[in-house]
Image (cartoon, rainbow, N blue to C red; front, top):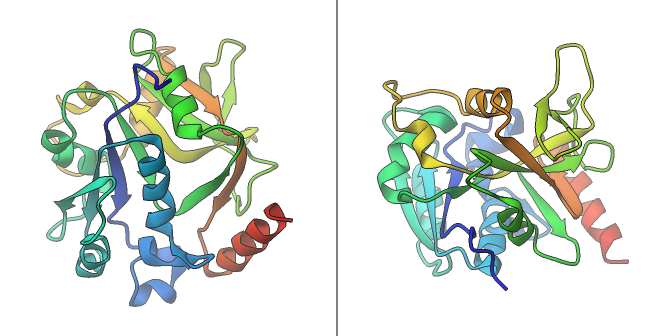
Length: 242
């Protein structure tokens, strides 16, 4: 049974420069880098299609024509391009620009530099089932830092006993990483005056208010941040099929 809080729309971040993936991204946008024969953005969009998400708003900037051409024939979810060619807006600003396309209901967020191998049940459905808009401003899908592939930073969050997320403190290690996937309320961005701004402060403010929650990923998360991460992710995929 579908969750009553299953978002119909997703904000898919595909506008970044992919600097850490150079020289590959000098001529190919990072969302189109292939892992196991499939572009990173398609790993993401296929999960949304399987979960029943109806439309994905994809922002574009670097090598935008390539991304648009790649997505032109995609039917599920329906693709809507949010054009940031003239100015890169960062993730927060990208959301603000896309708010008229996203609608008034909470929506999914998704980075395109990572994906996951599912466990027994759709992680997007599990996240939607855990999301309670009365208690939460955002719910993030998080993965164990120790078990994830391609993690080269000291984690992002810890869990409280009630499921709230606490951001990692400076000079500490956190046991969970943000997978780049979450559900967030659009009204958090409605009062923003700036055009370009980061997303992370909205998570930190929600955490300060006790309104940032997490759902632990069931499966294997693969972060593809550098050229050498491609082979690392493909080895992990091969092992998962044995």
